[in-house]
Image 1 (cartoon, rainbow, N blue to C red):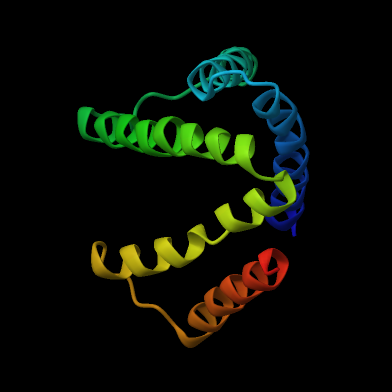
Image 2: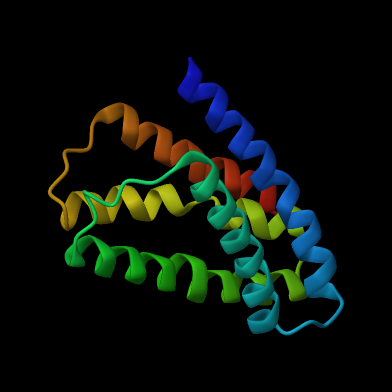
Length: 139
């Protein structure tokens, strides 16, 4: 139950953040600058949280660091810039649901690249996510 509550709180915060993102994006701020400033906020918070709660570097090796850097560049860099560009041209209430189809790509790629087995429930859930986004964003 603890994991589900934390996930709901994360979802709430992810639901609030796009409101600020949309205000900034629609004001004409460059998506590169917006992403840089947003990332700075995250870094400051993470430094303070790491100091407050401690950290363990024992599981961190060069391969893990490389993977995290690539994930950060893709998800926190390229995707966020595209997200801000999308917010500049469309409403947050449309952009955010469209970006929420990422589980579709995760399911497909984790199956192909990582060899993970995809069960029927995951397939049905993924189809429902895409269907839900289609309903929310349809004209």
